[in-house]
Length: 194
Length: 194
Image (cartoon, rainbow over all chains, first blue to last red; front, side, top):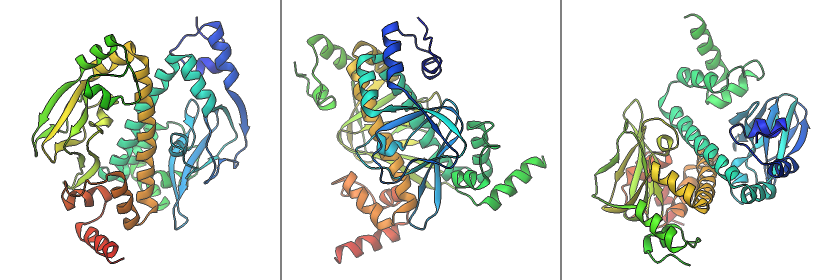
């Protein structure tokens, strides 16, 4: 059967579950409201959860030794967020995750995630496939940083995150693209002149 | 029971399999000998396999628009190799994978991998966990490129790939670290003076 609960339905679109499985899944996701500007993860935190976003916008960034912010990921509706470098290893957070809008997210702990994987193997498979795509996308983005022009990277960005621009500040985008806000303005101007 | 076949044993160390599962696994891995200098994957190739290395050394690199090589990954004994950006998406290769030593590798096709995952779900789980670690390690390496000094990155490198230095050329290491061979020599000299 198809899941009734809308959260389960949103998260695991392609999958169908038994009543019992549905109950189990619903029991491990916990709704969290987070206000604009609040931090979900601080550097040094033990990261024992990941978050599914149903509404709003979050940003994961790393602060370098000069105090400069590097945006690793934005999270919008239907994306997963965490400090995955910490979540997937046994190390502490090296990123900050902040809400850049009031957001509604669903938390699942590491322990519950593992439990879910064991009880419902198709969920393990579901996340394995998601992770394969994320890994490929992240590697591709790094290679784009090497090979593509800032303009091409900006076009990739608005393609990956459609409609995100109205929610986030220019310096967020610039720090995601690895350019200055001045370069970002120049690129936008160039594109709007065409 | 523990796997008898040494290849299966090497690949899936922690797992045990039935006789039937063992036969299935053995049937989908195909031994390939590749000579030093030979290319396993060219940019533009359809990447429909990944490779387990039992011996030798391979390198995955990306050539930027200026013709400069960027080493993404080295593969040594017990590592997996492919152009994972292509393997995990439906796109063509953007990397070159070459043998930098005579190597012995085992090929498993995308199709057989999926078949194995379906027939033996604990293998799906095994690769999901491996992938989680690789994803974290790759993200961490990118952040290290932002935050750490070249010397710290070099120390990370020899920690990740112990004993690899005798097998590979200095410009391979430099292109992995994102520095010039001159900087690499300077770092080594500094470290040997301590």
